[in-house]
Length: 468
Image (cartoon, rainbow, N blue to C red; front, side, top):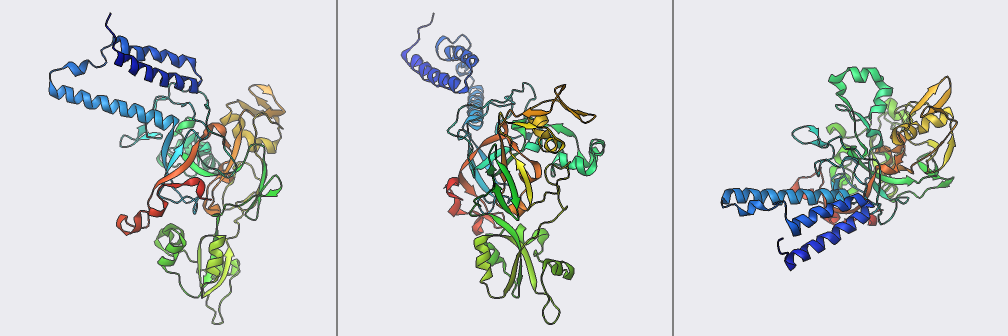
């Protein structure tokens, strides 16, 4: 029996205490078996974990040293990424002016409690696809069910939240936008599965490997919500709009706007110059429909279309040459809104009413309810759902009611007319919640080069909670 030094006992004790605390946090007694490994690493050493250090070949010793450091770093990054925080980049303008395209965020997993991974065997720092190899970054087995451990709090109304895309459970690999269920409604299921050249393979993704989205939580479990003329109402009361909420406007002006003006307003180039051309309306028929009138000489003034906050609207109104500002009208029938396979007549600016499911709440099943909550019952809560001769069967039994197992949330972007959100794909189940953005650690302006204002220095190390 080898003599165990005091130094070995100290190292073992520190790691053992940390590991036991981790097991208690995970609420999993089976993990305590890992203490056997720690005992052998630091005390008994039956397995020669560090045998490579005894080699006299300096090249081998250097290679194994590097490999040892890399493995330790990958394991540490894996656990930090799973349970503490992860990096996230804002990819779209749905939350502007609150969070901007090019913002890099630290997303706290402990704010709402980290999830035990559905796919524990996966490559760290990669969401679902390995770069270069273009293959899955995770193994499909084992796949664990949903479990969330204790965190610092729960999702609150108006929190900005990172979550897994709910409609991303099934994807057409070559056409992921719009989502698979919208594609089915547009083209038909058979056409999508048959035409692999256009749509690619149709595949399933576990919850934690679906794409990450970020939106603001507008509706809480049990809320009733509707939108009327761009105003959200919660339980019959006007919701407080985010300070930076934007809508698209048409602005008539006698004087053209410069790129500098748009930059000072914080309007990205893609918003005022889509496809490389100024976002203006010149078609007389469209201008007349929108309510603009020609000058005495029969010529229309220039009309721009771009998103603005209410404060920006007041600012632009005061500019010399500005004649008229109109909010972009709702387009009836122009886009599909949730539920895409049921005709509700709901639109982008006039949506609902809709009730947000709450764990333990029971609803009566009707054709209308089933259309809205089918995905919750079948896709998110994993029940078998069938309809035969007008009768609903859940898990093989006739059902007239359903009791929800999860809490659900309603997410929307602050850039309301340029956001694919819950109006498009519905509710966000609690098991899809990833975490809360807490800090912007880097912000890059895609419209500028790195040495010409490409770094937004004023946004660096800014707390997200201070951005309303």
